[in-house]
Image (cartoon, rainbow, N blue to C red; front, side, top):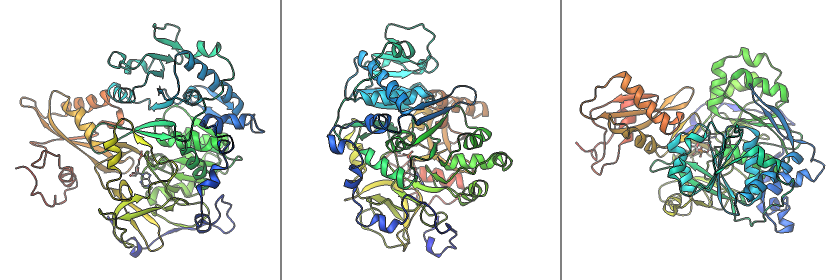
Length: 580
Ligand code: 6R9
């Protein structure tokens, strides 16, 4: 880990003169920036009536943009459909009526457990229309992960499919009253509603439930280093941040065809898969199905994608699939590319630039920040490897544990001054967890470490806690350890992220066995499968080492620092607090 980026040979991504950007000069935009001017872009600033479905869909449907495509949907083995803003106004109204009939009202939490399909987007919009709060769940979640999220959010309705339904443990969820099934084959239990049938009978216009800017927008579950996943609650006001960052860092405008590859199960898929682009009235592409390099590059050609927002793990997978695939397609429509989720390696950045002519721009942010905070911007040159500068109207810095700002070049805690528009409103039913983010006086603490250079540019250095980023997704070691020890053969388990060329990190588990179990490869596989079938595939350890004992402090905390040293072959440092 470097602590002195300014003394390294820095390579620059240089822009030709005259490049068109929505924010032509960062310094000028940041000087005197006031979020009040962004508020004025929303109808609620005049009417006082707030609902994101109005700002993302209805106001465009009722304007000259009404017949413009809001959503292109493409599934390589299935449906290919287009929806205009008018279509989404009607469909989200119908779904709102279905929810009202099911007794849903303002503030209720509604789980959406669907694959990436048009109904996923329609359901979320319909939930907004009735003033309820969507809880999007990624389709790869298995029973335990689904249970944790539905139980904590006390969701009373879950929108899902017959295929995913068996992973919803209804008998253990007393608050869950009804299921709405998409693509059901007609056989319905007493508490089940057919999406298709109920939509047919529903009215084509339902007025949005009018809210305030402080009412709930969405809950995303995310991992910390300890305890179960936490429900990050955002408020309607977050749209102010989604809108402006989509305009200036994604560089979106209404002549764009925008492709965000993230699933709405993760925050990128809502903040920048729905709210940001649609508050701007931009056409969005959603691609269903699995990752496939050929399909991905063909999408850019087919839809003439102009703006592409993806993650380092995807760029690395595309790179691994080789240059011949992008060479087959016309990628000349592209005008801007961004990246999120992990640092993008210079090698992958340069490869994307080689095949598309454009270098991906970093956007650093978190589920909890709700919107971009630190970015490289289209109008400015940037150093390759730099994370970027704080978005106008936000202030990010690098501080010591007491909250004192560090001089340039020193590594410390990456923090943000509280008060940006999309800052989380709460951790659902967990005030102590929320307060932990503000333990450095005066700051929101991200849990990342970083360096700020002389020019005020921030360089991400790594996670300061034990959270693992694997294939762009946050996995808390504790959740995996808990799933591991549920297996009868496992006495103790410690989990770390092991650096990996494609996934960023993979999950590696150190496991101490119960007496009487033999440390075999077959057992390793069985243990990994156990995690996969209980939590989610991405949470399962790809590597397991059997050990006599998992290293712990005298107070019983797993010393993941020691596990990381074992893995890398480095010195474990001070082990004086380790139990013998
Ligand atoms: C949006 C999202 C947040 C964590 C964050 C950091 C890492 C995100 C990054 C990045 C380096 C970037 N991260 N963007 N690291 N460069 N451009 O990813 O949210 O899943 O909550 O993860 O991801 O470690 O703290 P989330």
